[in-house]
Length: 399
Image (cartoon, rainbow, N blue to C red; front, side, top):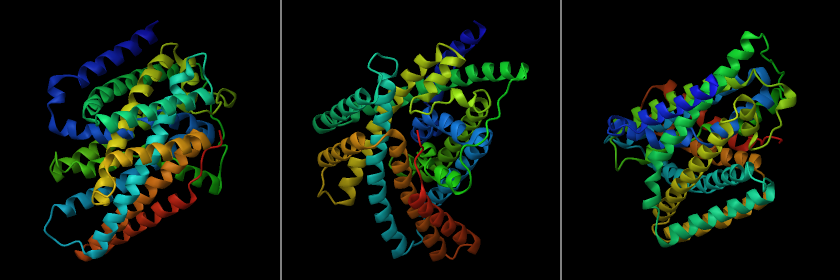
């Protein structure tokens, strides 16, 4: 009883705090919302079970590596944001790479929307009698149709207003999940019943699987494209804060989750978190489904809108936003009906890894052009190579 009361109290108090006028009026907080919405989204739904099932007691170390890797890639983008605000020339190589990066991001958005909507479908049918792969894909197809029709006829302005509310609801529910997990973890700890599962993957397989999970901590790059609303200093600081907060949430979540379930309880599916949370507290599965539906739909809308704008920009209007939405839907439906969610996660990770590799290459070229410190240019070049390796070798989870 105390656990359920604490969970509900955590959800309500967090929601009140995030929806307060004072916080909503903070410019830095508003600038944080967009990257935070992407980083703490689908990753929270799938990452914990994947890490626990695959890496066992080493899961927190892998989570820390993912957060550090994401922060380093964020460093390259923050450098590029700052470079764009100065009068110093970046050079023709950096400018050419910027155009290539825009193309890569446009197609990465296409795959990420497919990823979001497939999770939307899987979570949408999970607690119903229609729970199954076929009906999940049907719901995903219907969501694609709604988004296409909305974008084609009405645009996304009305739906985009949902972003702040959906983020507040999602973070409030996550706070409830963490409180519930904390009760469960400390109960196991007091009973001397914590579980240390051995890793199921090792060596090169462990590395390539981690490469395939970069999408789960992706989203910080959205700060790069908020220049019309916020100055460079605000975007840089808000991106850092979003990454710090998301890393803290992910680390606490992974630590609490990784030592309380036996190997037999870890049946790895895209909605495994629901079955795990059912053991923790009966109220949590319903809260998670509500958070999943709101978060995945709003994230898909945001990325669909972003991809439409990018295609218009990089093709100089040859492809309209409407045509981009139709192209996104067509590709997304093909992927939906030919791949499972874990494969789509790996595809999306590779697509974003290409983008991060190009952003790091842009930072390296800019640093060299501006005769910056040699160590910085070398670091950016190394990150560009790492992004390329992730794109080439990232593997999907075997569900």
